[in-house]
Length: 169
Image 1 (tube, rainbow, N blue to C red):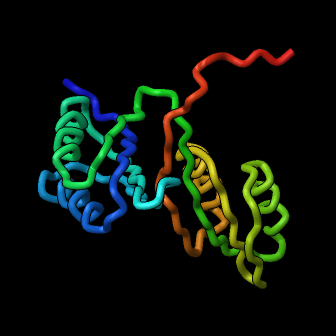
Image 2: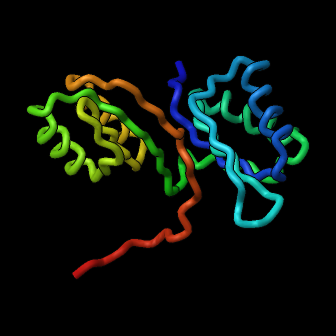
């Protein structure tokens, strides 16, 4: 019995929205699970990076990888799942708040190193960045206060270049 794992794939492509459409089409046509996808310009003009979060066993992810390599304008596919990588997600969360609950919500925001980005008489909007577990944890803590709206970016990730250990004395 194989267990499904969360996989993060970093795909370097020529900047072309048709390429993104083809990539998404693979997941739709083959029935692969697509948890999140981000598409953004790269440092090199004419290039873009697609970060895909999916779930599946190793065999499924290998099939996804092969299909991605067959897409026109895909230059490189890297499975970051078992590599040291830098991965972040952004969420904006609007929380319903009575004035009495605001100090608690502001303390929660501080604990998660989130920013208050908008305040009205009955809501606070918070911005949190970090790995998916951190964003999920903050959402769970805020649920009892009443989440009015929320938007998440999905993961962005790159392979970590520094592979050594850091000694801090």
